[in-house]
Length: 373
Image 1 (cartoon, helix red, strand yellow):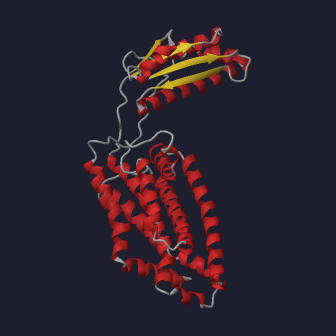
Image 2 (cartoon, one colour):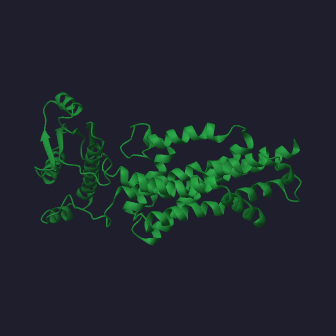
């Protein structure tokens, strides 16, 4: 197995197109896109003022007081502007015409119900402001649920806490002044991870085209182990391309990933597992399909990356982009790099491990079957 790994690594480094495409090209893209598009794509976009119409449809006095108190506390008359409306249809029309940024309807039940308040949001045309409104309303919803629990179980604790002033909106310093280089350092690594399907595919397609696969068949080793050895032989290349890309982006171009070494190592781990998963998919493709993956897989991947915002964060198709695998991976990477959250990246790693196991089992079975034929 060690000999196969060494052989695959040497062949990869001998091929100048591989070295350029998988090691040099993504680094150049980080530099070019991060600088050339710096003026059109802003890493930290100013939200500006958010104008919201709201209507209260509940008759529960306590809920009405909670809503009005929240609105007064959040509104600063400069950036967040709440205005009560009596004509919901007119407000929806204003939101659709970009005259306001959104409409919120509070539909309440009684305090005895499990969910005493429902919030309906009618979005405007600005995607960033839509997310802002959703975040504000989600925060209110969570606080409102907590207050209701306290009212039922310990109302005295709530009454005593009302004397303390609480800031409803607190600025949080992310610790790093982000630039577009940071954005493309991540998205270009995601791109090269998905493009690694070529490595896995050509690993076996090359053997078949050069007729050298027959030599593998007569080797004194089980076919399943031989298949695994060929795939594992690509591991040094995976580690090499991720390490070079991340190190060059940070040390030469000044890009930032996560704010601490532990999170950066975890980010590296996700990219490694993701790339290996894509390689296993490519290996199965190379065994089962005779068509060059450049003609089949590449158009699909390029389209998927394009609508996932890989090349420009401004490109987003609501209802489509967020369901793309590339978008999911990028979202998980940014969630860890910027906020230090692990939930999404753990989900990506788990899914990738499951897919890798399935692909390795399928590949080993197909490779063994081909020997019998």
